[in-house]
Length: 407
Image 1: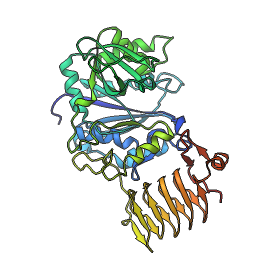
Image 2: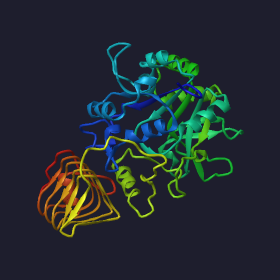
Image 3: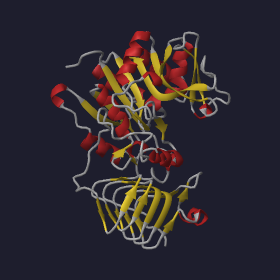
Image 4: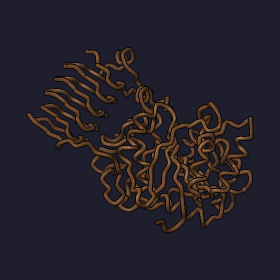
């Protein structure tokens, strides 16, 4: 029932996400809630499904229960056509060991590829916020004839040292070198103040991927990482190309949010990405109906504002009640209650959280089911907050799941 190339999507969702603690204390990084209604993995899966991918395996490992449950209950495809999105835990097929790296995760799951027999395999990370039509990258890969195509996004050269960097050859698309967090990142020909940064998105010819994985598995010196080992191996063989993310055109994109991609691997990046959602002309627009971000929304009534409660430059989820409180530049998920006299600004609030009367919260992230008692102050005295909670490098105060704030 497929038209076009037969592509299997593999999503790498096994990351522990230590830099997002305490949000990852009880869940895998791709299962972290985002944007009031979603989980991080919904972005990559929405891109794949909207693009026409219909067979997707999600490789999981650490603290995967909530992620597995979310995939099972939300991402149900039609079995009539053989379509599926399925969570695949580490199965120890090659002995009593976990995945030792992202390449080993795929190597240990080669049965998925052997069963599906795709022409191409798309490998995606699970924890970035962006819109993309991956089928356009598939076509670019086919046209190039390469063994692998790596998606690259242009970033300021001064910031590129934080990422894997792609140095292109004279053709402008062939990859000359693939450098992991280089001190002096190479620029792009004709745009020397920019560098191509790897987005962690790879498109492989199936035979080339299997061959590379087997060679890597036999290399005892390898750390079995896709970006650290597999891609450099194919670059060295002269069989790798780059796909410029700027060439990707997504229906419904605005000039302001076109080309948006954010790695939300740190608490500050996670908080900043939420602030990108709430301006009048959002830097990332969740309201694009032509390329929707899909998820399973709870059966709750609409949000309610009573007793003069209000929200400005904010998003408020279903079932939430703002009662005589003031909310500004914040994202409130579903089933949040904010009581009279409370004041929130620059705050991300996850489902089930309860905020008491006259509480003051600034630049904070409140995980699910947090209780903020009457009169509590969070983000007002950051030095005090450091003694009680997690505080990010930029001073964002984070309360983990189910925490009761100190008054």
